[in-house]
Image (cartoon, rainbow, N blue to C red; front, side):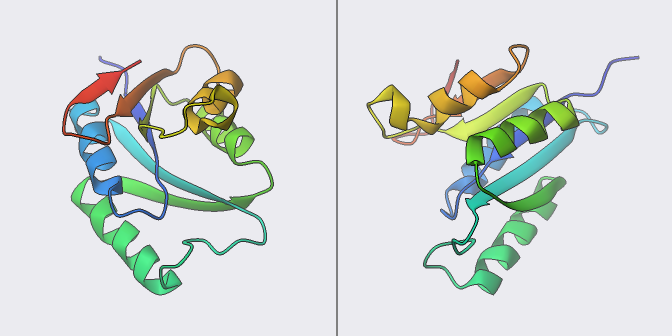
Length: 136
């Protein structure tokens, strides 16, 4: 029997997160595969920035249903460590993220998360500028 593929999708308050879920669904092709949509916000910050909290949560739950994804919204002091911990505890195979606009590695969320994540997790980075995907 084929082992279950587990995909973690890191989302922010941006509504472009549906593209990330669509990419995760391409990776998690089989019925028993799992998709975890995860949003982590720093403690003492609003969950979704300028968006009305209830609208943002409703949006996330609505699109998660379309992709059979679980929704995980977490407050933490260290966003990258929390994401890495979630990935390890959930035994994810892939992490799907949107492309970073930061040119300096220390400010790049993808780079920081890759440094904190166990090495056997594959990162799949969705290009922001167009619909082409880029895996790393």
